[in-house]
Amino acid sequence: MVLYAEHGFDVSTFVARVVISTGSDIYSAVAAAAGALNGSAARWRERGGDA
Image (cartoon, rainbow, N blue to C red):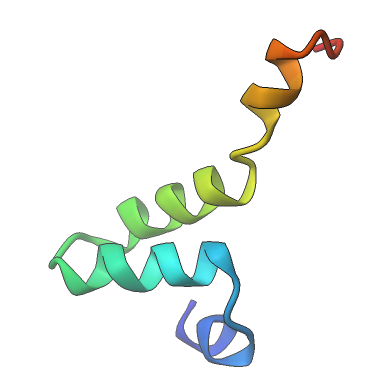
């Protein structure tokens, strides 16, 4: 995870770094990063997209 975080700095990387900096475990950081990476899916569904 650290190697990937150093390679690029996008939204999911930022979220992972913030979560880790609070003292959370790596599993929470990965889950938060994945949620940030797919955050627009809820808006897409609200606009009538098929699930």
